[in-house]
Image 1: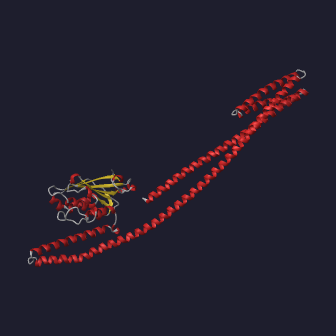
Image 2: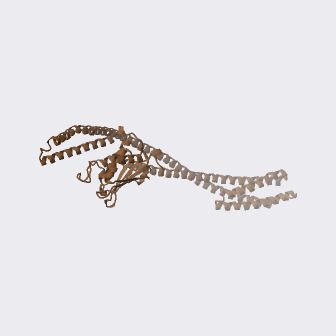
Amino acid sequence: MILRNDLLGIFLAMAVSLFMLIFLSWLAYDRVQETGRRTESVNHSYRVRLKNKDLTNTLSIIEIGHRGYLLSGQEKYLYPYAEGRNKLKKVTRDFRLLVRDNPLQLRRLDTINMLIQRHINLIELNISRIKAKQHFDGVALEEGRKEMDKIRVISRHFEEDELQLLNQRAEMQKIADRNTNFYLLLLSVVSLAFLLIFFRLLYVELSRRISFQKTLEEKLTDLERANAELEQFAYVASHDLQEPLRKIRAFGERLILKQYDQLSEDGKANLTKINQSANRMQQLIDDLLLFSRTANMREKIFQEIDLNTLVKRIQEEFSDTISKKKVTIKSVTLPVISGIEFQIIQLFNNLISNAIKYSKPTTPPVIEIVYKQVLGESIAGINTNLKENIYHQISFIDNGIGFDPIYAEKIFVIFQRLHNRSEYEGTGIGLALCRRIVSNHNGFIVAEAKPNQEGAIFHIYLPVTNHLAPKL
């Protein structure tokens, strides 16, 4: 849970950081775009000023050409005049495109075009007079000069306004450049800070995990050592208990054979209790040895097991009991699984023998074994990482005395019993052994009480090995 919270915190920090980086990147991009727009506006003012000069220069060429022709009457002066006229059309057209976003300048350009047209008309009048071998019209020439002066005045206003706009736009460009540089620098600093923070977080997390792993390895080593010592202790203790137990049973049997008739009724009863306790002690020791054996990692050799054959073998072993108690065992086709053979045999043996043992006195036992494949998500309390795994579900359903649902977990605790030994014999280790065996196979066992205690159901879940899995 702590690890998950730490990872959640890191992912949350990464999400917030990523959002901030995206936001700052967007701001930096917007500032770069703004700088581009300001630069374009400055360039636009320069182009307007250049086009204004180009217009006045073109008019000057036209003016010089026509005056030279008026004074000399030579056709060669009309060439620059004609070129100026042709260029004037393109200049005014381009000029209009440049100032179309400025209504004031557009009106000025319209006025200039009107004055230019009037000036050209006066020029054409004098040129036609010269071509007709007449003197030029001085009044028209003076009027043309006045029109040209008006054009120059408007052109100066054009230049003054564009110069003012240029200064404003240049200042705004400087501000945009400073803002862009600031945001780019801020983005770089924040990115570097986040990288350092994440590096630090990852370093701390990695160090913590390495430390945790070392601690876990030490704990596992200690646990393995403790389990080995516990296993050895159980084995040695069980074997050490065998010797005095054998003597108790031997002396008890000797008393029964040689001196039983000489004992009082109370002595006979006590001797019987001694023998019963010795037999129970022997059964406990045998069960402890079996339980200890299931924890022995050296004996965990997995092999293919045909559960159908296994059930038939168990039925043969219980044939006398089955015949005596009129037991009915129904089994569907079971899969071939990968497991530890002696443990799986013990598992099925315990579950079937329990179903027979805890049957109702007046009702013949019926044990039904059913099978299907399920996803891990259908198993209550399973780890999230295992929910997508596929499991064999083998269910043992009986019609016995059942149990109260509140004891669904308690019955799997070693030496725990729900009934008095006088009612049902046993040591209370059978179901604990079943859980240990299923756990050894990375599976699960779940007890389910039927309504009104009309029997019990034990679900065994064993992971499917692909090459042994039957088709669904």
